[in-house]
Amino acid sequence: MTDQNTLLVTGGSAGIGAACARLAARQGRDVILTYNSDLAGAEAVASDIRAAGQSAQVLRCDVGDPAQIAALFAAIDPATPIDLVNNAGIVGAKASLADLTSDRLTSIFAVNVVGAILVAQHAVAHMRAAPRIGHIVNISSAAARLGSANQYIDYAATKGAIDTLTLGLADELAPEGIRVNAVRPGLIETDIHAKGGEPDRLARLSHTVPMGRAGSAMEVAETVLWLLSPQASYVTKSFLDVAGGR
Image (cartoon, rainbow, N blue to C red):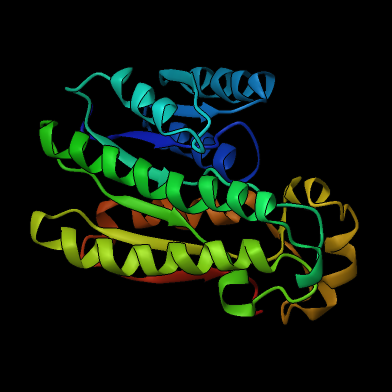
């Protein structure tokens, strides 16, 4: 058995999740990654993991469906120690308050909040039974601080919930040695902006970043993997903004 925990990344087929999975493999970790609709993306990430000499397990999981979350963890060997990157999430099209619908709100909260909490619940149960304890990094967003007025206030609200979840879980799990932290990415070069109907968002807003540029998914991944490493052994209940000062 390797002396590093296997990394479980939800939403690992693209963007920040994929970067975390690839970096973990380069650091000598085996990886379990989930996807919802992008099987080709997930398999491309898995191929890179295997090329780095590590094992990759690809599992489909819509984290908006509690039954699929339960099935995900049932498919993971109970003897495998894991760390969790609680990353899977969705964003709707750019909208103001007047544009928000009950269906949209229900959908985004089901994935970004309820799903994230249930993934953490199952992960902690797995960690408690595994031969070695693990740690959690929740992927929040600078939107939790900024509010995203006239853009994605519902998404921002879900990430505010993730911040609060991080605080509570960190306190609850610290006595067991499970560290819980959050990373809050800012303007990052991923396809989430196009999915939200704003493919030009980075170009339009980069001037608002004190560092004058968007960040990369790998810059976020470096922070996530550090938080899960022994070098961060006294870090819990913390938020690291990877946002260029924004």
